[in-house]
Amino acid sequence: MRIAVVGTGYVGLVTGTCFAEVGIDVTCIDIDQKKIENLKNGILPIYEPGLEEMVVRNAQKERLSFSTDLGTSIQGSDVAFIAVGTPPGEDGSADLKYVLAVARAIGQNMTDYIVVVTKSTVPVGTAKKVREAIEQELEARGVNIAFDVASNPEFLKEGAAIDDFLKPDRIVVGVSSKRAEEVMSKLYKPFLMNGHPLIFMDIPSAEMTKYAANAMLATKISFMNDIANLCEIMGADVNMVRKGIGSDARIGNKFIYPGIGYGGSCFPKDVKALIKTAHENGYDMRVLKSVEEVNENQKSVLFNKINNHFNGDLAGKTFAIWGLSFKPKTDDMREAPSLVIIEKLLAKGAKVRAYDPVAMKEASHTLGDTIEYGKDEYETLIDADALLLVTEWPEFRSPNFTVVSKLLKEKVIFDGRNIYDAADMQDKGFTYYGIGLKQ
Ligand code: UGA
Image 1: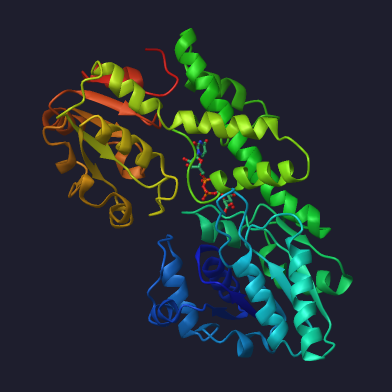
Image 2: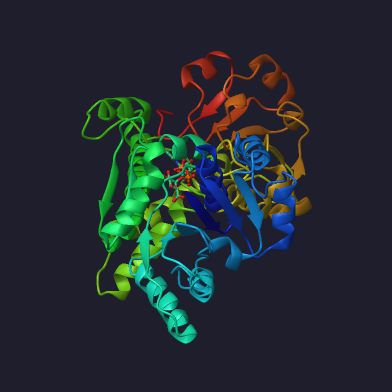
């Protein structure tokens, strides 16, 4: 089979590379000439564990190529994936201008039957707009070429995207014809080895599935953050409560870790977009509005603890931060809670010295020289008034606490991810603050 993947961002690049990995002939297309040149030289625009090596290997085997020429690349392809950006507009709705521009370009260039698949996260009804855009172009050309549109949402997690793609929990595909279903079945056959299902459904349901999945996960997190905050007030320990409820299979033990709020490019954007879509269609998503509100508040809980501990006197103090990215194993700083915490600390006249294993370059684009960047986790601590654990990178899990306590001016740890054991920290002589713990 031969496919074209339009858009070499995070989703497009992982999708194209993983299809090439199982032997499919893939062309990844982007309008950004520089990006394509870099990719040809094995330079990736994003950090994702294992991806660079996989791109280079598949390119060498000539199963994966990169091009700026959409027209030639889609001719002879069985499937064209649209994986371009859908940035949130000012009102929170997804801006479809790039998706529809690609649809039009496909309509202008296609010569044979093709299945055009939306892979970007797009609102319910987008596949229909894609179909209309292609139809208009075919009409303008005065040709009649059969095609189908399909919706194939992705459920990749940053940092684990390759594994998620190669061994998916499920693959959801929305189609409106048997022919498209057959093409998509053939394409995804190599990924069904672990027995997990390929679920076909109608297109609007597939489009909605993506939003419902992210909204449900965001809801779990905000719910647990609410419970954590209440635990602190009531003298309960959220770690215990989490274990207590997580062993109920109906609830499940995943995605119920309280913290400093969800971030990233997906949950915040998708929750907002779903609220907006519902509102436009006369429905009020009350649960999701609260999910969002709780999440915004949660980004301040660590700062509030710091402020209380130091009686509001943060001016001139130095805070060491471990972790900047919105979660481990990515350099993604979009909607990272670290940004809110840093902003609040700086506003109070405090100094911040931060260390992140991969995200410092990315973070410096936003933070510039408003903060210092540590050489490593220990150097970051020198003479700091407290340590703030913001992103739970594996290398922060088991530091040498003797060194930590020697380097810190005051032995205080604010742990935004509950990665340390409160009793152990107290034994080691630290004043320790977690999220939702007994104080
Ligand atoms: C999320 C979904 O998990 C993917 O299934 C989906 O495909 C993706 O969005 C997307 O729409 O593209 P991602 O944003 O990469 O993936 O990150 P997650 O691992 O889901 O984490 C999201 C946020 O939730 C992070 O800020 C994380 O720290 C937070 N989180 C996660 C918690 O606070 N508690 C938890 O128990 C789990």
